[in-house]
Structures are given as structure tokens and as C-alpha cells.
Amino acid sequence: MNTSEKNVTLNTNNSSQVPGSHLTRDALFELEQKEKTTAQKALDWFISLCPLLCCGIALMEYILIPDKYANKNPERYAVLLLIPAAVYLIFWIRAFLLYRKGKRQYFRDIRHRAPLYSVIYLLLTALDSLTLKTGLLLYPFIPWVNDIINAAILDWPMLLKSTVFTLRLLFLGYFGGVLAGLITGVACGYSRRIRYWIDPVIKVLGPIPTATWIPLIMLLATSLLAGSVFIVGLGTWFAVTVATMTGISNVDQSFYEAAKTLGTSERQLIFRIAIPYAMPSILQGMTQGMSSACISLMIAEMVGVEAGLGWYITWAKAWAAYNKMFAAIVVICIVFNFVTRVLDLVKGRILRWQIGVVK
Amino acid sequence: MADNLTLNINHVSKSFARIEKDDITNALADVDLHFHSKEFVSLVGTSGCGKSTILRLIAGLITPTSGSLDISGTPITKPGPDRGMVFQKPTLFPWLTVKKNVEFSLKMQNRLNGNEELVDRMLRLIHLEAFKDDYPGQLSGGMAQRVALVRSLISNPEILLMDEPLGALDAFTRMAMQDEILDIWQKSRQLVVMVTHDIDEAIYMGTKVVIMDANPGRIRAEIPIELTYPRNRSSSLFVEYRNQILEMMELGVKE
Ligand SMILES: Nc1ncnc2c1ncn2[C@@H]1O[C@H](COP(=O)(O)OP(=O)(O)OP(=O)(O)O)[C@@H](O)[C@H]1O
Ligand SMILES: [Mg+2]
View 1 (spheres, rainbow over the protein chains, first blue to last red):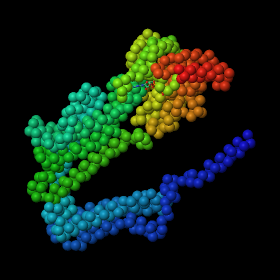
View 2 (view 1 turned 60 degrees about the horizontal axis):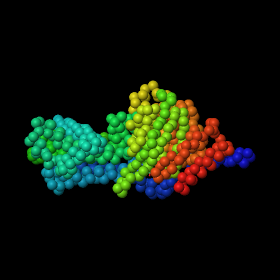
View 3 (view 1 turned 45 degrees about the vertical axis):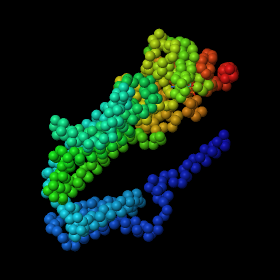
View 4 (view 1 turned 120 degrees about the vertical axis):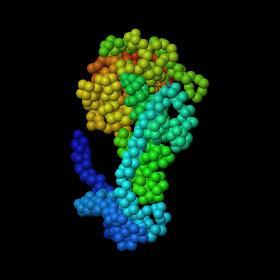
């Protein structure tokens, strides 16, 4: 009795005096880091300010060095340079204030991004001096940034129209392909008899790049839109079908058995067990399908469909309007990046349950 | 719910085709068992003697090579929620949260509406309310097995089949869960068939202990345990039963 009481008191003492028991994650990180010297700290602060410095360099280069070619609306590029720098400055001030309050992770984050941003500004500076200032870089094929901005602003209705067309085609083709791929994939993964017939088709046609079919489909399709949607969707269909099929035919039998004893119907087995189980594989197929759709989309627009950003690029090139061509390329870059980002977000959300699962 | 059902296993044999050789495994040979509601059957035997195979036959997941199974005359042809099964490994669905796993069976039968209270009660029963929104990947083995148990219990099956449900638990939780299961069984009065490796557990819980032989799987003996609940593990009768069963199992090994 006596000893056990003693133990209890000892224990309570221990738990209240564990070192670092009420540390925050941030403080723990600081504790485990090596203490930095004053010089290192100063260097960190200097690097965190580098993007602003490099923005200054880019601006000075742009304003002070005389132009070799006529440059309309010169202020536009300057504004483009300044906006990100201003945003960065706001975040820097916030990090600075939080740093003084002891929250250092925001500063660490800023310090981590600073070198990349600085290099981007320096690259822009180099591009400007090689094009607008000296014309050393393949003039007139590669325009300077302000020229691209001017082209984009001048021709924005056309660019917007092309972008909308491209997005529409992408989504129609992509989601059509995903839907068709899910249906064939589930059917093949679930039923051995259907797989028997679809498998050879996939084996024979699968390795042929989608673009190969473009001329034929353009001939056969009843409408241009239907044809192009088909081309965009074809690669997606293929990727999603294969991924779904693999995912579903790998379903652990014990899940089916458990579900059956819990009263699942055949239909529910597909939608409640097979598809959720195959989801990681399906989403991987969808990502692959997206890149395939983007490629076929650009080729289709450049070859046959007389609209969209791909067509805009070939059209601008034919008129030697290289600044417009680059404007379209930048838009494509932004659009495709955005689409991929959204897909990644969806993927992360659906696959939350995988976090921490050891496999 | 049929209160007086009889589970008949009529001279059942089961053989499996081997994958490697052109050969078969005789898992069960002429097993003849008849159980009734309100019975708690403990099934013991050496590893590989066909205990899981018997449960899977009752569940309707596999069909017998010869012989037949029926429940009060109705042949068992396919799995159904009237025969709940807790598997040797938990097989929780990793893409569903603990709560969604527990209510799975209700949802599949469109009975979820109005039964939310039942779901909460089940979670409370296994002391996992705090984990209801976690995914099975974040649970320990014992926690997962507890979830699997209530997942099968929730639709109130007439026959509950359990394949070493407490194998993954530590001694202390295991004893607590034994009492929990007995409590549930005494309230619902269903037929329980439980496979176990632990002879003490078999005697502590069962109204009847069925001992099996291996190669091929046969029934060696059915021993009714005539002790009142709650049972005392160190009572002389309990020890007697234990010695009797151990002796029989050893005989089986020697043969
Ligand atoms: N699906 C199957 N295919 C082939 N053989 C099987 C299959 N299921 C079981 N067997 C064989 O049947 C025999 C009995 O297996 P069973 O799983 O019923 O044993 P058990 O008594 O549950 O063993 P344990 O206590 O180790 O779980 C074993 O020899 C096993 O190899
Ligand atoms: Mg087993």
C-alpha cells in the first residue's frame, strides 16, 4: 500500500517536469536546430531581401539602358515587374513582424523561396537585355516581354475566345474520356468475359499514339467538334481504362468477402468496394490521361481544328506575329498548370485516407 | 428474428484444389454438426484443421464439395447479413472512417435512417467514440478488431461467426472483450460460433466446445460446458474441463 502511494506521487512529479512537454512545433524545431552565428543570420536576412533587389536590377536595366527597337507602352512591363515584388514585400513585412514575436516559420518559408524568385527576376533581366536592348537573341523570333504583353492586351478578345474554345474542348474530351474509361475499366476489371473481348483491343491499339488517328478522324467525323472531342478523349479513355482495370482486378478478395457477409448486393460491391479500392490507381490514370489529353488537344488544334490556342499559335506564326504566338504560349502554360493543380487538389482530398497507411 | 433456429451442417466435406501441384487438400471430411439459437460454440483445433473453412461454409462464402448446410431447413446458398462474420484479420475498409465502417451494413440495406443512435451505441461499446472520424490505417490492431466486431454486430445477425476475434488483443483487453461479447450474446440470444486457439477462452465463453482433428479436418468431440456465467477461471470444474480438453487434443496430435 505504502509503496504504491509513493509510486503515484513520483509519477505525477515526473509528468509535470518532462522537459519540453509544452513546446510548440516551432519551438521544437528551433531547439533542435544548430544555433546560427550572427553572420549567418545576417546572410539569411540579406537573401530574404534579394528578390526586391533583383526586381530593382530588372527595372533599372529596363529603364536606364536605351532600347534598340521601338517599344510601345513601356510602363506595362514595369508594372508587371513591380506587382509580384509588392506582394512579396507585404509577405516579408508580415514575416518580419512575426519573427520578432518569436514565430520564425514564416521567415523560414520566405527565406526558402527567396533564391528562386531572385533568379526569375535575373532571368527576366537577361531576356530583356538580349532582346529589346541588343537583339542578340534571334530577333524577331523571340520578342521581349513588354512586346508580348502589348500583343496580349491588343488581341485579348481573340485570345480569350481561343482560350474558352480550348478549355471547352479539353473538358468535353477529358471528362468524356474519363467517363468512358471508367465504364470500360470497371466492366473489364469486374467481368472476366468482357475483359476477354476488350483486352485484345487495348493491346493492339494501345501503343499507337492518339495523334496518329487525327487525319482519319477528321475525315470521318460528322462534325468538327465531335471529331476533336473524340481525339482529345481517346488518350484519356485509354489511360483511365487500363488504370481502372488494373486497380479493380487487384481488389483484395477479403474485402469482397467481408462486404458480402455485411449484406452488399452485386451492384454495391462495384460502387462501394471495387471502385473505392481502385481509386488511387484510377486517379493516377486520370493524371496520365490529362497530360495525354493536353498533347492531343494541341496537336488537333494545330492540324485540323481551326480554333483554340493551338490554332492561334500556328495562325500567329503564319503572320509572323511572334509576340502573339508567345502570348498564346504563356496562356497555355497558365491554363495547363491551373488544370493540373486542380486535379492534384482533388486527388489529395479523395485519397486522404491513405495518409499514414503503411503498405 | 427467428428465435429458435437450427444450424445444420450435414455430413459436409470440403476439398480445395492446390495451385502448385495437380492435387487437392482435403480440408474437411464428413463434418456433421447441429447448433441452435442461444448456443455459444467454441471451435478449437490445431492450425490448419479447417476451422476457418467451417465458418466460411456457414457464411456462404464457399460451397461444400459434398454434404449440405441449412438453417432450419433453408439451404445456405450465398452470404447474407443474417450471418455476421468477424474475420481472422480485421478487413476494415481503409477508405471509410471508423464510423462509416461500423454503419456500412446498415447503409447497404438502406436502414441507416433512424438508426444513428445505434451506431453511436456500438462505438461507445468498444470505447472508440473518440476515433470515429479516423481512418482504419490510424488504428492499432486491437482497435481495428473491435471495430470489425461491432461492424458485424450492428445488423443484429441471427448467427454470429467469429474467427479468432480476440487474437490480436493484449491479455487485459482480451479478458474485457470476452465479457463484452458474452454480455452482447446474453442480451441478443443469437447463435455464436467462435474459433479460438485459446482453450481457456473456449471454456470461459462457450456453452459447448467443439474439438477438431487435422488432416483431414474432422470433429473429435463436442463437449457441453455446464458452468453458470460468469465463470471462474480457477474453479476446480473449470480446471477439470481444461484438462479434459487438453488431453483430447493431445490424443489428436499423436494419432
Ligand atoms: N482457398 C483455399 N484454397 C486452397 N486451400 C485452402 C483454402 N482455404 C483453406 N485451405 C486449406 O484448408 C485447410 C484448412 O484451412 P483453414 O483456414 O480452415 O484452417 P484453420 O483451422 O482456420 O487454421 P488457422 O487456425 O491457422 O487459421 C488448410 O490446409 C488450408 O491449406
Ligand atoms: Mg483460420
